[in-house]
Length: 151
Image (cartoon, rainbow, N blue to C red; front, top):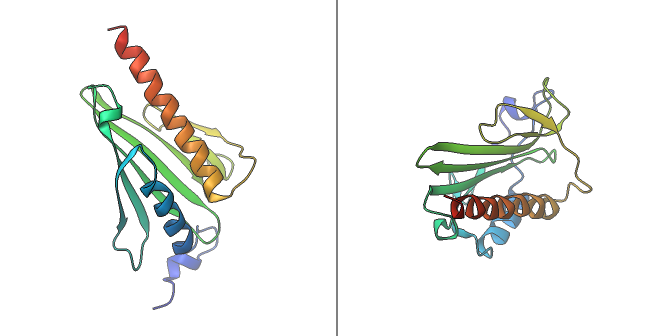
């Protein structure tokens, strides 16, 4: 089955990059912060890579944490980080895709993802992006622990 018409529309992100998704799956599987990794809808035709993070690494305020990764053959991507907390949700998203609101490469800022800022990365290699994102998540966890020790 070939790409759907949506995959090749002008300005679209293109079809999923299965090779990159599999590379990132191997990286996630070896990361100590990650509890479980799965492809959606399945490993044979992945469109999304979902990882549940180890909530033992978080203060009790955070009930679940996850990251969802989409990567496309155009080198566009979406990496969505979400915490479910006792007081609501906290989320952000690193994106690279054609859009009308910002540059192609941007971040939907925490805590709601509503405000958007332009981003720059020194490299668009998937493992470099992964390293940057997981560095930000580690900083987030440290700040949660600092805040919880003051309560």
